[in-house]
Length: 65
Image 1: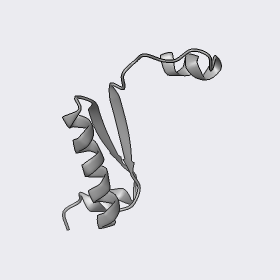
Image 2 (image 1 turned 90 degrees about the vertical axis):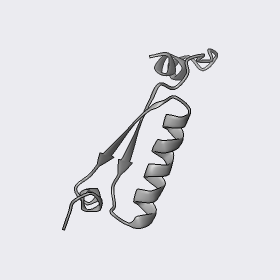
Image 3 (image 1 turned 135 degrees about the horizontal axis):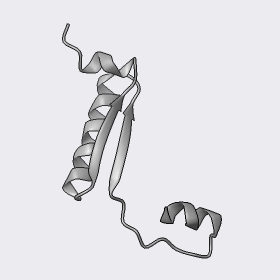
């Protein structure tokens, strides 16, 4: 909520730390999946909760064939 208030009123600076991130994996290419896992791992190392959301085409990366 603090971020939304800061957007409405740009004079205020939010002091809130990021607590959660969601990374969207939209393609099953090695570059996209690898980058998503690196970003999620980096967030977890900083103590931020990370979630990966796989779209229809991104699901090919985690399905067994």
